[in-house]
Amino acid sequence: MAYVRPVNKMPLSKQQKVDLLTEYAAYYRGAVAVDDTALNRKIPRDAFISLLDRIGSLLIDESARLAAAPGPVRDFLAGNPLPKEMAPLLPDSFRAFCLALNSLKHWVAKEQAATDRYLLGGVSRQLCRDTAIACLVTGEVLGPDAELHHPVRDGRPPVLVSKAGHDRLEGQEAVNATDATARELVALRRKMNLSWAHLRRGCLDLLGTPAVASSKAMAASARSYARKASAVTHLGYRELLDWLDKNGL
Image: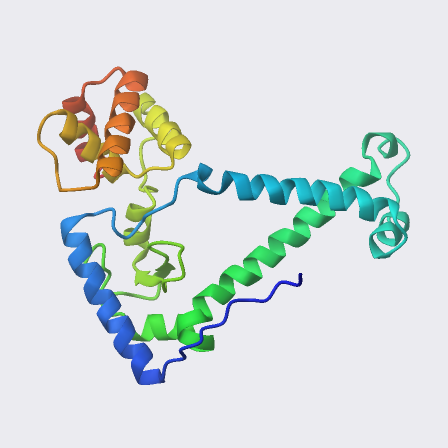
């Protein structure tokens, strides 16, 4: 069955789009005041593992078939031969898989860009910029370095935040590269795909002073994050909080 891109069946007028974005910003101003991770929620990486396994298997099977069958893929491989020494090391099925993977990458980028237009149409990014005044993270007036950031990749529009605000959301604030604690914590943060705010929350929770109300699942993830951070750095939860404060995280 051919793929058909999802289309919004309830198109909005320009004024409705502006009103929607105004309410959207107000919603997040309130949400961030209660929970500082509200603007950066990521679904667990294994949530779509079954789907991704099926896509991966399809890529491998189809690549092998296209590499062997007459057609544009077979023609491309033949028209771009490998150097003599490399040819035995890269079978045509793998070369076709790499080409298919690259094609999939471009397709995903194109379709993901289209999701921003689902609610707001072709001027979605400009509308987001035109209706934003202050950064929802830092409160500062937005300048030319402002960036569009997706709070959740579920079809909702991006919000405009300052570069400093975006770095804070993504946990990319500068830390001292010579700091052994920083190296351990940055590596752990990337592995667990959680924010510095989650680490702070977990430490506070384990110290008996939770920062804000949160779901049981989120609180459990934050506590697990804090326990692992304590184990890899050999620091207590209070010391971890002191390190976060020292680095402005």
